Length: 210
Image 1 (cartoon, one colour):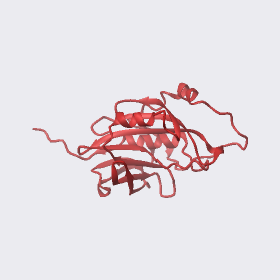
Image 2: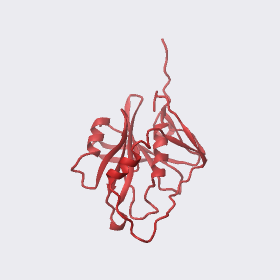
Image 3: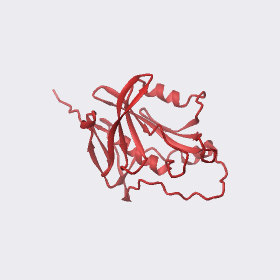
Image 4: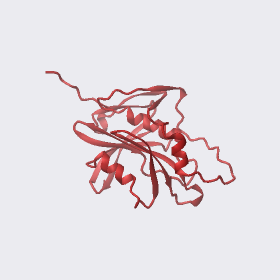
């Protein structure tokens, strides 16, 4: 992250951009968010960069930075229009055929304010609880509601903030994740891969010494 030293661990084998569906036809017992947190709360403290990833420059997408992502990552810009107005943001898709995405969005909302919003008890779409956090990272698990009752499920998500050229950016999992099919939903490993990519973002700004 920016000027921070990043510890990168390599997986053996190439990145898989598709979620393997081992779901049984039989309905599974519901697992509480609390039980998930209790068993996995320290699993996300360090990013894991899968093998097969390379450095990508983001200058041509309007961001003076680089990121480590799969060699065939599909990188493009999209537009967001929220209470901060309309602006372009960068999307890192693990491959052109994959639906797994990391979003890099400029924002005036501080990390603390954004974290409070995620944890707000008034959120109608999901209940989120912290699994891991530090001064710039909030990794949380939530119970998300899909349009199809059968696919309401526990999901992993994160928010990472970084400053590039004096501007604050929010890095997060795709905000429009589709839970209507098990093939679309992100697995825990999908989210870990995206989290590792987010932690590898590095400003290209040179530091000059007097």
